[in-house]
Length: 356
Ligand code: DNO
View (spheres, protein in one colour):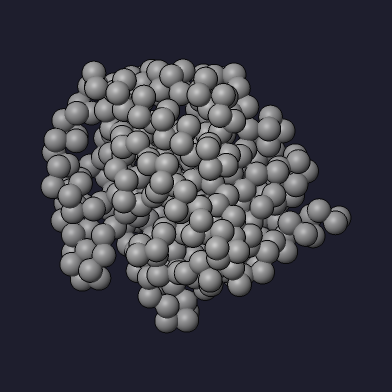
């Protein structure tokens, strides 16, 4: 496996490549071209420059998170074919620069969703928090609440950027007749179109599970549990069709046995990328993004690592979100300190499991 850190790119990240280079055991970054919009073709010069910048810092450009899928592909709108062609061209361009793994998701409208980015955990640090009761039906009330954060902290909440919020009614209208089965059909259509290119360019697509793994605001979510991931994998028979297994997403639902999923999909050779983080599930189904250690949350991080090692996992790993500790300010979930602690801890677990 290779331990990596997610990096948003110069101008978008408070963490520098130089700092990442100094975390023991972290040899690569997972990054993106933050300024490209879903549906655009990634320009070869921009990819080349990104790779050169990362390599000049002594790191590898390990993988891409994410090449986002345009909403027209998810809703099955007539213009989807053009966006799919663009997606294929982006994959070809990335392959030219040695990219082997691309993370993406198929969540309608919103990516990951939380109700508080600065939840105080009691030790002076803050963590991301999901309060189940808040994220129910009224997306406009949620948007207003999130805008409060945007104004207070002068930052946009990923997936809830003001431009997106301004178009929420329109986006919801586009999904009016997209139920779960339609979303499955649109996902299949997308995969059948891109997989020959992935095979040709040797790029492994790694879908990120829906976070949280249940439907929110009445819009469907399908990459949520074992039955659905089985169905997802059966849509196309190729090793390039695989998973980003994320303990922080699938693991926040008590209906998922996360370690069993790691064993199953690891044995199938379909986990190309692992997001590793603990999560503390509260009684009402709300959850807090705790520190990475097993003791801090509801998941057994040793069991998860052991399952990865025993099934011969050889993809990329990254510590997932971290808390904000030691007075650091930055993108919530994506500071340096707690993620560096996470990387060191996870590396320790891997070493112990590999030597056992
Ligand atoms: C959250 C991330 C997700 C992930 C996308 C992948 O922090 O794990 O935003 O990058 O869902 O497309």
